[in-house]
Amino acid sequence: FFVFSHTKTIMFCGRRSKKRQLAGTNGVMFSGGGEPALARILGYSTSELPTKVGAKDWGIFYVADNYDIRARTGEPTVGYGVEYLQPSKLWNNPKLFSQGTLEDTPGHFSDINQGTLGNCWLMAAMSAVARYGVSTQLFCSPLQASEPRSTVCVKLYKQDGENGGFKSSFQQTVSTTIPCKNGRPTYCRSDDAGEYWPCVVEKAVASAFSSGGYPALEGGMTVVGMGMLVGGDSYWIQTKADLTGHELYDIWHRLMSKGITICCGWKEVAGGVEGRNGEPSARDGLVSGHAYTCFGLVNVDGHRLAQFRNPWGVGVRGCETGAGGGEWTGTWSDCDQSTWDKYPAVKAACQWNGKAADGMFWMSLHDVAVNLSRGYQVFIPHDEAMRGVDLTGRSGGSGGSGSGDSGGSGSGDSGGSGSGDSGGSGSG
Image 1 (tube, rainbow, N blue to C red):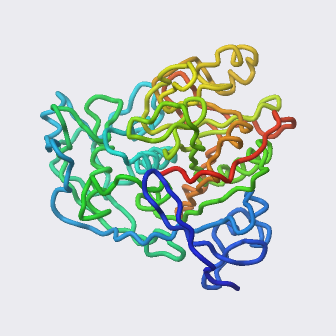
Image 2 (image 1 turned 90 degrees about the horizontal axis):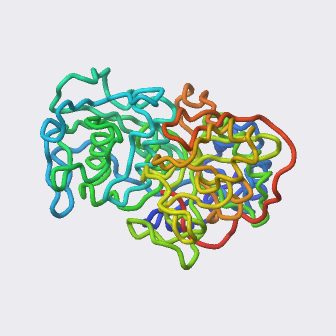
Image 3 (image 1 turned 180 degrees about the horizontal axis):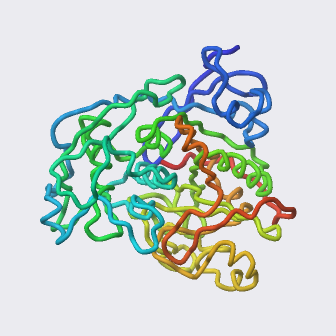
């Protein structure tokens, strides 16, 4: 067996993050004589793994940052002009959880919407965890949604496992006061008035992540956030330059069907509109250096589509060139009514009903492969029940952009070239 060969530094959501690259047969990586969890869970040999996940030679990395995550006391530091307010000062009927009309579970992923803090990585992580239906399990004990409380206890994980994994749980207690500006929550917020579970989970991470409080959450990796919240292992896959949309669909379908979350970012391009936290523009409405999570896959009549969520939780800003507000505006987007109408079977499978202010959108796997920035991240939860969740199917979404049912296998894709080896942005 082999040991670490070198480290690689890549920009993720504003933070430079080290990925340890592990050397082994055909570019697969080992550490301490152990088989990578990714190979074991997928049922591949370590020598097969790079080809099976679309990686270039020496293109699989463990996340190597060593975060000092531990229980801390006191209110986490906030930004300039931000004050803490009690939920009762913000809403007439505040609740920890409030299940919306179109939400299929309390603690729905649509509850997580990024505020003024550049912590897209954590917002994407929280919404990805909610996708498993385990949001209520983030808390240390069963909680009554309507019960008034001054403090809550959130269960988090330390980065003390093998190869940068998050293994040991601990309890972080925080008050239920919420960071506000002008009498409104300024950081994470729910789309349901009075619901504040996302605010206190964000607060717990801000407390435990660093003595720097909320400002220290600027920039990071989505899979690191997921590790803190539920425990697990994460990898960064640097994809080969000629990866096709057809190949990418098959790879992601196998990963997601085994409860593995996929996150990605997009290549930077010139001439677009910057993101609201200064992220550089990407193609057709997307932004680079920003966290996107894959929430579903569909294959209908050879049309392979992936559904993504932008943690801003807003709709497409505009359909003209260079607009979009973080959402895709190309083929199969919320702007592309004509393509949806042309293929009613695909439209039905995706439950697409037009534009919606939910941060959700669809792309063909061909366009995904063309626009990927260097590769994608994967997160493998340690919890077996979570790994039993098939993430390819319906996301139980709210709003009109729909949530796709996986359509199984099929043949024929719209070509597909290049996942791109240039650029340094990722999801985070």
